[in-house]
Amino acid sequence: MPTKRIRFIINPRSGAMHKEHFADLINSGIDKSKYEAEIVFTEYPKHATELSREAAQRGDHLVVAVGGDGSVNEAGAGLVGGTTALGIIPTGSGNGMARHLNIPMNFKKAIEVINRGKPERIDTVTINSHFCAGTFGLGFDAHIAHLFSKAGTRGYSTYVKLVLTEFYKYKSRNFQIEIDGESIDRECFLLTFANSSQFGNNAVIAPFADVKDGWIDVSMMKKFPVLIAPHLIYRMMNNSLHRSRYFSGMRGKSIRILNSGTLLGHIDGEPMEFSNTIHVDVVPLSLNVWILPEDA
Image (cartoon, rainbow, N blue to C red):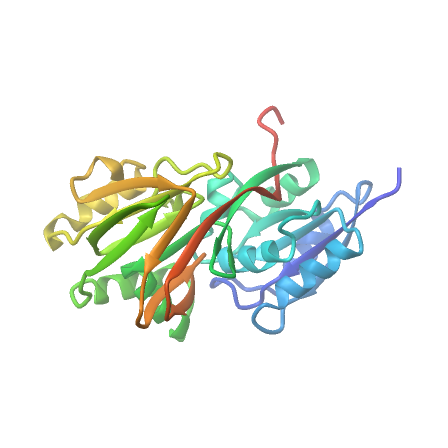
């Protein structure tokens, strides 16, 4: 049988891992009886979108994002609406989408998912004209995403330090939101619109989010006393945040956030700024992702 072509897109800036040996791991681990592997590196922001779109246009079977959630976002943006599937080898700081899809964090085991996996359609989300695979946030998580992007070092430890430093300084703000035509006015410390369930590192912000259900889960956290922060972190890490009295959740398909000033946000962990009303819409079953079958 003829081999199928895979383009591996490596983000050399993702996470804190050294990337020099990634190409060797791919070449030694990929099943060459099935696949012909091409390895490319991103050189500038949004380059992965160009590279994935190019691969899809020439008929590649699979594009694999080797990086974190930002890399998954960029590669997915070039594949949405098509048939070429998106695979993930997670090497970022949080890897929220990979964890949601049960892709192993171990590099060699993630390559085995590529070797033995299959495509499955999932929902995506648009935020104005922007593509989102996992989560879109306004509030404290967006504040941290902007600071993290400017930090001199990457990785989980940098993220945690920023959270601990900024928690006491950050002020909740009021949001006017329309969810499928229903207007709500809510003061939020955290406001997350979720296709997948977590920020990364198993910190679950949307306990009931399902990437195949055609809904956007809206998670709202009001400001909470600092003394109970460890308990809420425990709930996030144990998928029980919905049991907290500081959490409320809704679901929708078409959402508007009314806004007339500068508003900081993040899409899949990457910082964004908004100056007008924000439109958030689900696009059902619009992206092929590569996962391991349950019976594998």
